[in-house]
Amino acid sequence: MGLRGDGPARGRAARAWPRRSGGLGGGLAVFGAVAAVFTATLPPSVPGGDSGELITAAHELGVAHPPGYPLFTLVAQLAITLFPFGSVAYRVNLLCGLFGAVAASLLFFTAFRLSGSYAGGILAAGVFSFSRLTWQWSIAAEVFSLNNLFVGLLMALTVHFEEAATAEERSKIAKIGAFCCGLSLCNQHTIVLYVLCIVPWILFRLLKEKELSLGSLLKLSLCCFAGLLPYTYLPISSYLNQARWTWGDQTTLLGFLTHFLREEYGTFSLAKSEIGSSMCQILLAQVTNMRTQLSFNIQALAVWANICLARKDKQNPSLVWLFTGMFCIYSLFFAWRANLDISKPLFMGVVERFWMQSNAVVAVLAGVGLAALVSESNRVLNTSGLHYLEWLSATLFVIYQIYSNFR
Image (cartoon, rainbow, N blue to C red; front, top):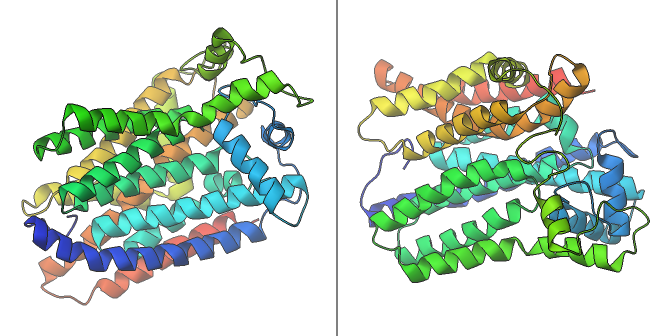
């Protein structure tokens, strides 16, 4: 798996366990560090954007703007109830900061399991979490940090599935993953593009192992539908009608589908009646914005992860290529459907938030690329003494991100 190569199932399991233990410990350390930084920089009251509406919907158990964000609303209400300090707005901000810290730990876990490199995992988690865009929207009461969490979770589960040594373990991970796919769609719908990439890949792997049957497919479908159950909150909240502020009427099937499909905004669009920038303009802006958020070096390392793994027959680059494919499909589809004029600063601010989803994948690939670069350099120079440069590079990248974006 990853940079170590693949062997028989038993050998793969033996190699996976040490990484699994170290990955968990490192992930907890990353969570603690990122949570501390995000908590220290939380706004004390209501930030901008949709925060005021989302906080109000959670506090009064109303329905937020389409598609309703039922999972965020319910978890935010739980945080408002359980957190014993701060204003209502501060509690939801804190919840989102913790979501961001979990997302960082999952990105670390994914990069570490792919590369076997602690430094690569720290690079992935650090450069993503402390980019200006991620930091800004991880400490505000918004749905984006929860979406980042699900991006990291689905990637981590995919890596875990690839390393599974038995049919029983693969079946268990696939069911958990199916549930998480459904649950992720209860927050931000853009993640459906990642789901549509991962699900066929998982099914193909199960089919290849002769572990896919009609019964197992039915169980996976039921797990996915179970993850969608938070959407039952929308008609319940609308029927009870106890919130002073709520959006629409979801007590009828038509009303529910109108909200769920975002028809008031335009399904598969950011706005219903806007004439936006061209697809090429948005793609170019995304690449430019990514260079600003993550740096050109991070972009280059992500590309190197694909080049280096493709050159080595003994390695299995399927997951790296899967994640790269997810990035490409998401970027192309979003650029096609993001019908806002990004020459206007307000609309640019709306659009750029959705690039966090692709930046997370690039950060993971960069962590893999860093480990691959050091491994290749050691091989060419016939030495094993360059790993300290790997740590130094990762540390400097993360420190520079914090220094550049701390306000």
